[in-house]
Length: 353
Image 1 (tube, rainbow, N blue to C red):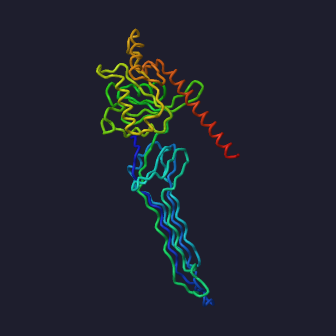
Image 2: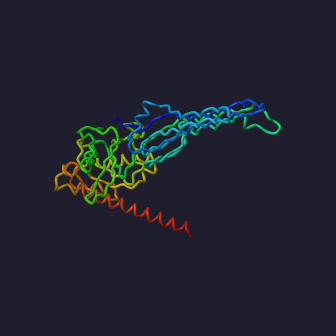
Image 3: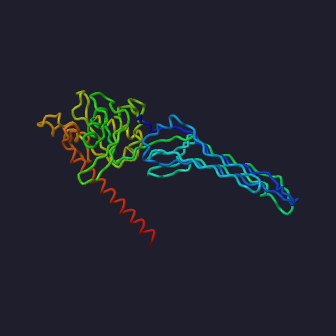
């Protein structure tokens, strides 16, 4: 299936039904009076998050959605039926933007989240509504109001705990294949990964986390070089970034230190928040470096970067160091969740006081 993470659609809620102009006409009742009923309200239009939907590709083929119109009122004080609401399924993690005003309407993160994006029109009033002691035969009615119409821009952001960063051919896809059941394409040329991939890493004690692999960045990505920054939005929801560094590049002129600095510059250009997200440095392809110079090379990279965070030495191909890295990631995520639960309990206790 083709991966599509952005789409533009037009949504129209149902218009309200018109009120009815009618008078009661029955034998032996010469002055029956007005009996025109109200129209029905128009149907609302909602987005609903559904985990069975993985991409926005369906919206490339159908771009217009319209909820049902309310029925018109009828005689004998019969009101029109309300228009049926329309629910549009989108992937969990979808943001809905008003494409005309660039306003964020809402974010559907969890399964079953619903978002009203277009309100149905109000029903019109029948002439029975205008009856009074001084106006016994009103001929006045009102029409239903039109339903709301909006041009939406849908943006899907993958829901993952961990995001992989790195230049093309840094070994991200090989790593995700090593630690999960995901099977992204792996080859010895740049830009093998053309769209994001998700993998679920399951530990021996059945704990698990989700890792996202996005296409590699190159210098100038902010200006559109390579695949640009279009997929970086998928890393904004992650809790931790793993910065994969190719320690044995095919091109001997490629400097691992400059690779790290290049990626971080592009991150900061894209988003200050993403640029300041927690990062762990993962020195990859260690199996290709002779053992007698391996540690010396790693120390040189760390000193030149003045790296203060966590560092791991792994081989995505052989699996060396991958288990230890995954264990520490899992422990880190558990600590974050425990801290969030403790903070939520504290806030709840403060509200009760």
